[in-house]
Image (cartoon, rainbow, N blue to C red; front, side):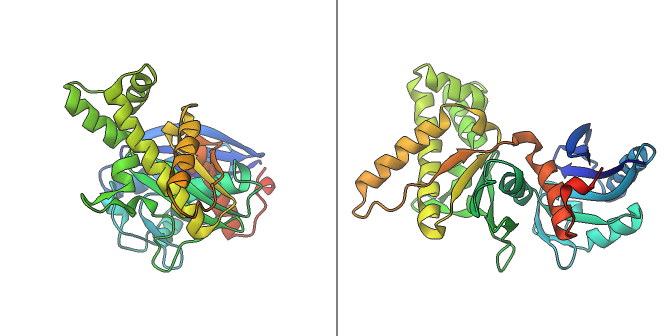
Length: 299
């Protein structure tokens, strides 16, 4: 019987499922995120049993919000799925699923996917910036996640970008947040994608908010490059699909370098390969990496 890993990506509104087998990730759909722990357990067991009826499931690889403590199996911190936090959930899932289980933070999963198989494949050191409702990220050294002393490795969204108003990178670089502010100003709801489209058509107000996003990302990339000196900075999240984003960021970094006495290094900023599959792919890679398995062994 063919072997497979069940990949799970937990989000605040939905949970995505996929299977990894024969060097391929195949989507298995998504379900609304349960509102309680018992229903969450039931859903994962159900999905595992469904896949086990077709293939030999060798493990479950989970991408999760929160600060995942790999040593204790506890998801620390808080997230939009509060019942996941504060107890040894990994051992409990192993018992209920009767399978090996790995859990890793979602932004770390995305970074690992890009490092091992995506846009950072040729980079020994890499930073991932995942841009959405906030800004998450990962630090990858030697194709392994660097978690930091307090599990805050890669939490770039907390960087203070404007101390006068207390604005963080998550505040300023999130298209979701900036589109909300733009919508309030014009009196109608506009998505981040629509705001970028209006800016490209010459809408000066939309351009102001887009420039805020670009400036914040350029400053963050420049500062991170000149702090950690990595090979690449990889952008993920829906906004990274915009073909105009990278040229705008590069041009803004050039402007920053012209304004300072010592220009420093210009970061190599690239767009991620996997986008909406990055968390699932990274979860599988984390599962294999933590067990010294070659990913192509699962077939």
